[in-house]
Length: 401
Image 1 (cartoon, rainbow, N blue to C red):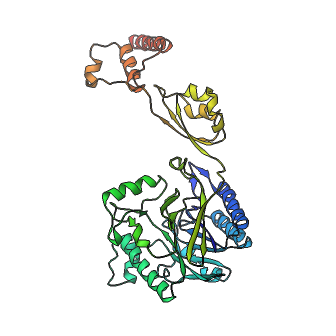
Image 2: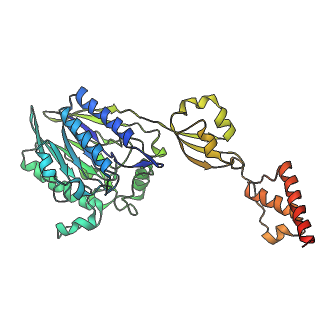
Image 3: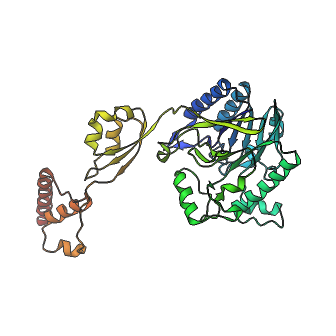
């Protein structure tokens, strides 16, 4: 059986105010082409299908089209909900969708009810663990401690392993949307070093589902299945040969710019996991971060390749250029973010405001103010002449008042 592991589609998310629906549709079309070319049997999507719990109609249209194309290409679909999704909306009419080979696992009590799909060697059990918020599910399991996400997942995996055992050890795949770290620790939690390691993998777009490290989950919680398809982290990651993150199919922040986009092609043989291969997906508009002075960025021919990219600019001019974004966009029309981080930072005097003004002329006061707000750069000769002229005109008006 060939399985394509993907996650974190985030349908409906905007990128610095720009819709991503068209670019995501392009990537999902390419994913369908992979299904057809690689003879994929099952596509699994491990959570965060939508970016919002209340997706717009256009987002549903993108999802419907993608699933329809995947089914037409010959693959079954297994989907679980993530922390961005509304489990109720995503799971609406899932019972009827399952009859068409589209399996949506969103109910919080559904994790040990596998979707069974047969291949030449027999059944493969697909267990979907929706994102389970401890405070919202603990009432379903009285007597089980569920204060942390790791405890909830520990209990879910215990139930899954018990179900696998009842089915004579059939091959199994688990989908889960969680913040999993590659350290030992079981369901009770992990230490500070693991928090740092996990944080380094997450980008700024991943909504925080941790609180002081309590909701980090140790990788050993998922021992047992032949393959575990994880979602939530937007970059691909291999925690063990059988436990992996696929990452998002589209770049959703500049922090992800260097991370490849794609999916894992997983093959099961009669004994279980056989091979796992990375499959690249296209990047409709790459992301680039440019750093330098404005004049340099506008003139340097080495930046020509970025002219069609989404661009984030860090200007290092000592004085923030006037109308910097508009001028950047004359060369990089898809520039969407600009920050000013001057390479030279003036040392400001510690003297109080009244001390800095003492015994200074009006022209010197204005010049000092400009120097203060422009990172140590005072008025130009033309500005100095204008300052003198305006002050003299003001004095003349006051003398005749």
